Length: 397
Image (tube, rainbow, N blue to C red):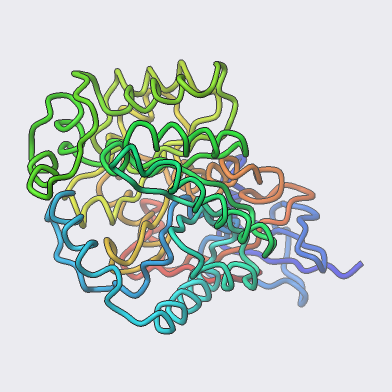
């Protein structure tokens, strides 16, 4: 059997403690054969300076928006961001959009992303997904604020779903957020996603969203009123409770399906407790650089960690980020929360997203039999076990 031994200053298996001068043995197909500590290098050992970790799982991306790189003004809040996306979304020809999608896929894979949860509103990313070595699960996101549009929107997304599956892609419809869709469409699209076992939902991304659902006030409410657009019902409760109650209208408990809650910058204890008491398989996805780009805030990591929830990391899109890089997201978290150990953050970046995609038995950790890929992260601050602004991630396998 052909064996490839890859070693580094430290190997982070993700399950278990880091191994100084560790190694991972792989077979010719990339399956893990063994993990251990070097007792002496041989000529066949590939040794790298840095950290060796499994391939990343990017738990939230909109790769369709790659043509919007550096076109958006930062820190406008959700209302300002919506105005920009409406104005700029179609600001490049289709051929250019598709070429940039392929370019970003290649870059993400080269920098260590083995699996990705990607949002699609059309089919422009399908060809790239069908031809990348990266595993992708596509969430076909729908919008529609007027209730009478719901049936037509659902028929359209069902057709898109059929096209994705015909191209060999794992895909399912999913609702976007409380403020971009009627209650009827939210429930209908959630029902479609739940049938297939997967939902990705933009949750409590901003205080503007909370204000809209709790009191019907704030910048987002004014934005919608100014465009004569319907708004969701005022509930007097956090936005996540509206989502949970909407799902309960179309699906009996228990909820065993995989639910990705995205962003969560304005979530609170009431919301987290409600989700944990309702969903048996929920993942809280943070997109730090995007959250700072739009809202100049981060998710409440202290709260989420205290509740013991499953946290994963995404890059979001180049409309709300200057770069799609898991290494930069990790470095961002560490720079704002140096108290969170790198071992824990790499679990978020590698394994937790893989579990949420139903691929935790294949990706996300160095365990015998898995096929997670291997990534070298260099330029480490060894004193603090932290990435630096010079750290890069490079796929080794």
